[in-house]
Amino acid sequence: QLSFYEMEKLASDWYNRGYVTIDKLDEFIGMNEQIEKITKLVGRLTRRRLTGMDLERIEKWVRDYRVSEDIVNYAFRVNEYRDKITLKVVEDTIRKWFDAGAFTLEKAEKFEEEEHKENSRNSSRRKSRGKASWKTGGEAGIGLQSEDVKAPEDKKEEQSEASKEGAVLMGYF
Image 1 (tube, rainbow, N blue to C red):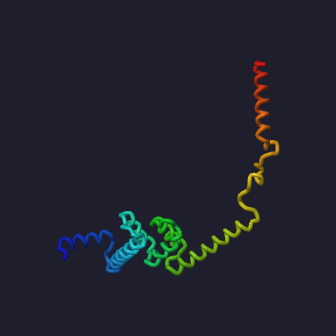
Image 2 (cartoon, rainbow, N blue to C red):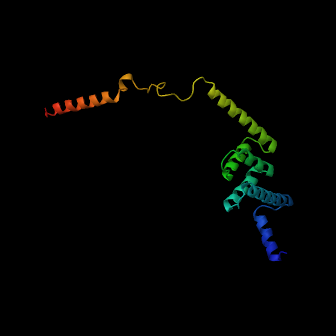
Image 3 (cartoon, rainbow, N blue to C red):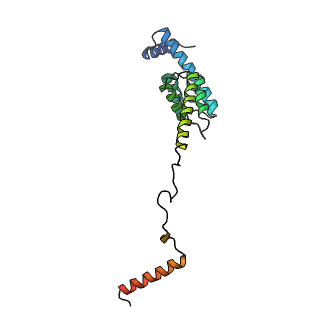
């Protein structure tokens, strides 16, 4: 049970934060309940103890993006292909949906489906251009000329002749 002093301090804190009506106070309490639910969900999904930075990130998701548990859960599922899912990656996914106006699970699923189709189309376009995006050395004009390819004994003869010519020029012979 709160003392009179604690209740006064709490009321003053709410007033300073702008919770001056019952509706605003209900919104604040609802947001805190949502933060608590999502914190539990994220802890379960990551299978680790959350840090202070993690908790701040989750609060941001609830306050800025108004996420639900379904959205957070789906953001984790969408990123399952990664070796390690970080909260930064999940936040980037949530922000992408938010920027696209996908505020519900259904809209996020539709957005991901459309993005997957677009990525598949782009991938097939690259493959269907006829030629690979990489070339062999010969195709790129970097191939060896026939005069560059010589037997090892031919190279030895050339080297010894070149060294004799150099000695003659230096005045040794």
